[in-house]
Image: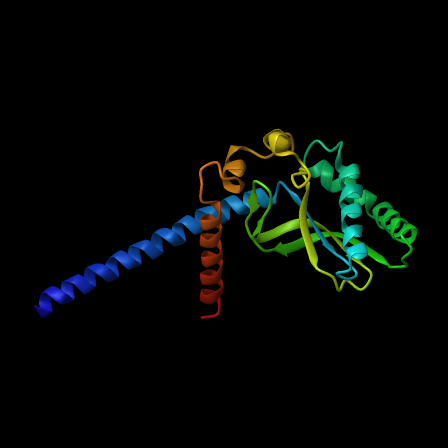
Length: 206
């Protein structure tokens, strides 16, 4: 009986190890896909002055300004160049808009690599990781964070135009499969990425 119980326990442990290994492999593959995706999109990270209704509304104006700048961009490199050249204008225009609303907040606008958490949007999601981002801080930057995508402009695209917008911005079939529910379970895949990242960080400390 003991031997039989031991065999059962051994089988259970082996199955668990195989399941963990499969999850880690899945996470590693998804992580590679996320890295590739990260080279094709520009995120938007806006931090409002406060959580007041007026301050939060100013974030939408920043999104509109950024999308106006990028509307004619044909690919990621052109979008990056346009944003880099337009940063002073974007910052000034945002400050003018804020002043027109009766506020005197300062505005800081930078294009930089930024760490993003997993985020779900209307009809798609983006895995956690490092992305090039237009990072805008309004006033004291004490309000809620606002995360979006300015290239391709996925956050403001109607559901019926989502795929066309994504493809025209340079996203391929693998990218779309990763971020949409096309093949189901994208949130589970992103959790596998987070597990893989956590394990990699743990191994780096030991």
